Length: 110
Image 1: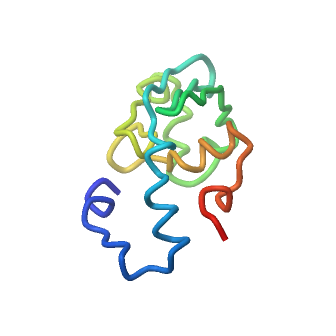
Image 2 (image 1 turned 180 degrees about the vertical axis):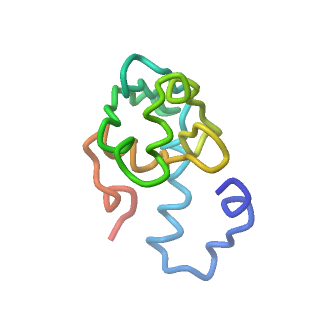
Image 3 (image 1 turned 90 degrees about the vertical axis):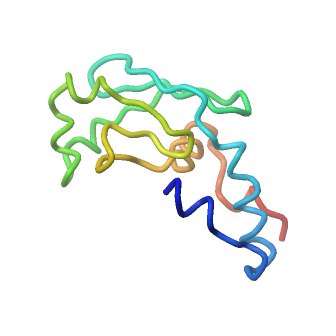
């Protein structure tokens, strides 16, 4: 994700897609902190913050590995994702929308 973000040229995209990419910085994770069980606290660059329960996530596919709470507690961010390893990460924008209650469409003008 980090590499793709750096090389995407949005100039050929429809205007609303380019605006979404420009607004991703408001969804950049400032801090992620393990709380307990399968809950994390996430703070974003724009001041939005909140707690997210990932109980359902650890029941699915490759994320089952995170049922080990020692592994789950090693959560970190690269800014644009919340991760536990190079292979286990979730998109920060999805978490931002969950915490803020905003919809992706709110990040562009129609």
